Image (tube, rainbow, N blue to C red; front, top):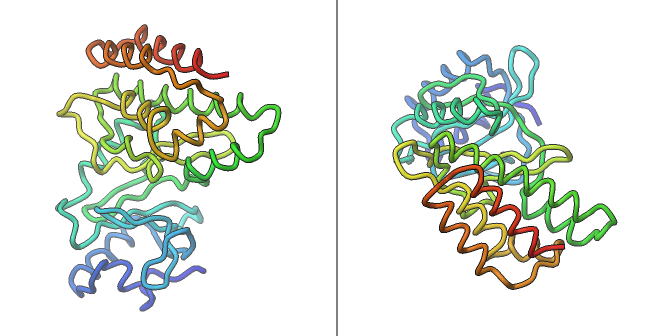
Length: 255
């Protein structure tokens, strides 16, 4: 369902989590300057009985239509966010985009980020489907996707950009038929030691529902001492050789 950005139904969404006339008007002006004409109310998350793409600590994400006829994703800063603006997040997206990681940044304002809309499933949903299907090419498809994700994390490490949320990847990684995408750089930093590879390995292979689903598909053994040893080495020396040793160790444990 499409709604003009000035539609009364959107007031509490644009000024979330409480309505503030001044903040609402400021955000509407920002949307207009970004060329956003309509908010498309669909997605897996519900706010005030309205469907959106997602909700986080810093903002909500909605699908929008612009004056150029493009469907894009829009992040709107929450009024109760501890972040005064979205400028740093936009800056971190530019860094990630330099190596084709994350949704492409289109434009940004103080309270809004306009970005590429990526169709896909949460990684847990995608893995659950592949664990259930057990088709002949299933393992290879999963392996290819996970290798791609780990490679992106290695590139982020080399960019000295720490994502900050990759130990909780289900809201930060989506998978489509031919693309794995890391989302949401609001907690990122260029000032702390990068831990993208080590964080993603923990999520994928050591603990939690994601790890369980990966093991259901790939038939991993329980041996992890060698992988932990290599991860410790990589943590101290984040280079290509140690990264490739991590990947080799992982698939040596799987089939």
